Length: 402
Image (tube, rainbow, N blue to C red; front, top):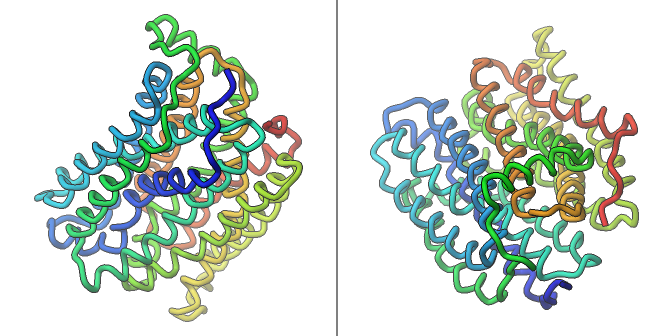
């Protein structure tokens, strides 16, 4: 069955909806120090709730992807937004950091379903020749949101406390419910839930595909670098480099420029494979810059830069690194949608589960290392990016997604 045609103007609804998980992840980050003080815990413990959020993200990928093979993806998305709103309200009234972590898990379980469901909606509502354009626009919004929302959150701290920020998120999610329903149904050609045996078979089918493994590995690796930086950014920029909330938010906007540039490379390219190679090639410059800062730190020379220059150099290096991230993510997502699989929802759930679980595991590893210097953080954060760059530039890129 051919996809139902969705008017081009309807894409803005999807762009608003895909902002939700990223806003949930980063809007309150400038307030992490204030949250730690009010809840009587450490900044590291508050940052750990971001890893809990990512665990919920990973679980949501499997649940939403599997359910989408049986039920209308649009209606499932509306339910996910409602659950996200509930998690936001609970977070707003959290008495302890443990309760906050549980609330953030519920946020992610509902709201991050957009990662799978919005792409399934694209697959079912848009013809193949328009998908990569819509997916790239979604990727750009997704990349800009977690980088710009800390600035918005930092400015908001002047008039709102962190609890009010979570309530604002709840209102935003509820307002999106009627909008997503305007898109119309997005039901599978043959709606059915897989039996346990078929579910296992669907996982095996996906994992047996060399293209699936390549796409999943690539997106997981670049996400490790991306989420690793986002989840450690309070420690790096505020604790170690002494930046106040508003300055922190402004600095976090800088990496968005790199991510956006990488996404634009893929969106405007006639050959997506070559574009992702160029994006990761440019990202090598950022990786080299990060490693140079680390070397200077090893010789005690990082401190020769002024208090203003140090954070600027850090985010500039990550911005150039993120050119590769921004190019890789939409490329791999479009490649996933082009695969012929019996249960595409299960495959999509597995794909994004691998991505988010990888990010959560890497973030937990970074925290377990108990890093105490900015150069040390930079070395660890760029390692996954180096691996995926070797994969692509080494001639192992998958076929161009259609």
